Length: 502
Ligand SMILES: Cc1cc2nc3c(=O)[nH]c(=O)nc-3n(C[C@H](O)[C@H](O)[C@H](O)COP(=O)(O)OP(=O)(O)OC[C@H]3O[C@@H](n4cnc5c(N)ncnc54)[C@H](O)[C@@H]3O)c2cc1C
Image (tube, rainbow, N blue to C red):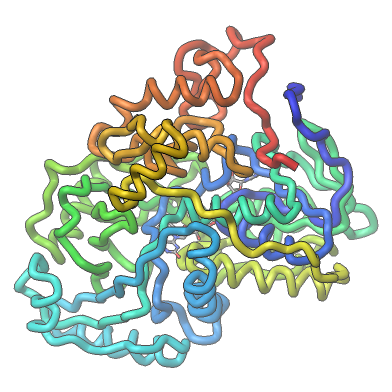
């Protein structure tokens, strides 16, 4: 492990170790921070939100898809309510724009009937059937060849990166330690109970371990002798359009679902882009985030069934995410084999929506496993608000620049992101350490040029703020060096692995 200025020593003991810094692990970390406990979250990537939590549809589902009584059904509805309560305080962008499931024929209309009944049973409110005319007046770009739709006013869109980062930052503010670039390689079990987790940076003694390792959660379970489930990665590909395509649709448009997935949708992002996708293909490799010609053609064909005139020339990027498929429902609760091990595994869609509700159930499971929970009297529920320059009124912009001239330096021209916002994103408790880490936090590089203009400037700011040479700045992944191979960086003090400033 490299030594870094101001870095706290690697923890050797904790009440609870959480494995995985996706939205689920980070939501659990924040929920545990309500109690007087020592909690450590270990993430093998250089940042949180680098697994499935960074590559999904970003939808807070209303909750009519899952079979009543399942974890998915219960936690979707509860999770969506919790986001409504906490998003503003945690700095999570969220817009309640509703969703529509579009029926193209009589058989689809019968499916909508079933969805509505299921939704009512799951506790979803406000569900309504819309006629073809109602649908077309709300969504003029939808194919005229439709039969009607199911309207869910509680459907919303959210920024999945800032959801994860918002939970993580709040957890850190309340005493949780998050250590990135720290892969768990083993779990010590003594007398049938977890005793410690093993990492290349050291061993942490812990009587409770939460497995929130996404597509790797089956492997983590097996480290503790539990082979009760297996995860199969199922890839979904996407195309993202520039914000100039933002008026294409006003709400999330689903086709009627098939047996495997919710189908290929056309939807706005919370930031005003539009995307199409995802498809669903099983892959062998849990790191296979490739997009393919075949897959992209599939999603274009699928999306055109809902919106025929897609603005394909405004496509700015493609990406893919992996569903952690493990059966019909989430795997949540105490391991059937190893005491002290609690799973939040197989968290497919609606996992983003359900994350804060999963966190509540996991904390309850830990209590049932014997963890003593006494309230943390210093718990602070919110994160401080950071100004978003391009959203400010002109007079506020002038005030911001007067208070900090770095607000007057626009670094990302496509999205109008200033140097002050980038610096704040790096200096925050769960601060950015990579170019894409900056992008996920403040959107520098998210626009039409995809970082072609601002990439070198962001690199220079990262180097200055982290106190490292520009040659040591990475794009995103552990080995994504921009200028030199890793070997050439030996002896250079690289950015801290611990995102906590504790
Ligand atoms: C195509 C697609 C579309 C989706 N759309 C939606 C949607 O619109 N709405 C919705 O609610 N849900 C959606 N989902 C589901 C949602 O994205 C996931 O349920 C959620 O992101 C899962 O979060 P997680 O924290 O469990 O996993 P992840 O985000 O994958 O996090 C797991 C983390 O564990 C880390 N890790 C793994 N092994 C180790 C180890 N040994 N040591 C340390 N760290 C480790 C990984 O690096 C990773 O960061 C979608 C999923 C996909 C794939």
